[in-house]
Length: 208
Image 1 (cartoon, rainbow, N blue to C red):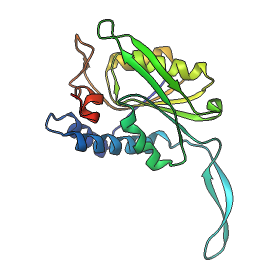
Image 2: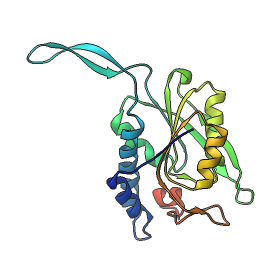
Image 3: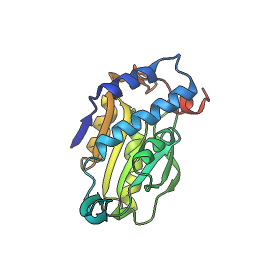
């Protein structure tokens, strides 16, 4: 099991701003992007590199570049879309897939309606992104779909998580790496994270 909880003051500060009811749609989107970039910097610290020869204005030298197939960023629709630009700012050449899931309002169980992943997914480092990790149902299902299509190297990034969701995801997929911006207290009777920030998708797209 590998769970990393972010401790950087900038991440903590920006998550606090996300939570505020007075944070509007435009600012909310920018904060999601900035937090994703900061978390991505930490999550991608172990990308493999290879040495290549380059020529500077002074001399030829051997220096490292990222090695292997391009990174695959896979947002869980729709809220996960808000985190993609932050990762692409770090790795512009990354491929992007999409997994569409919705949560049944009665059972809180996830249902798939779309799944499109980059080719050669088995050779890529896959980073699944979703701002909220609540019950863990959607996260588990998303990783299931990726593994069923050959994905092996999987990281999951969530800005805010509940202990219940972390436990459920790591029980189902103990081989993945999970990165959490902030671990909140618990889920309420409606399976919302407390204190949380409300519905991330609604706040990103201005549909609340």
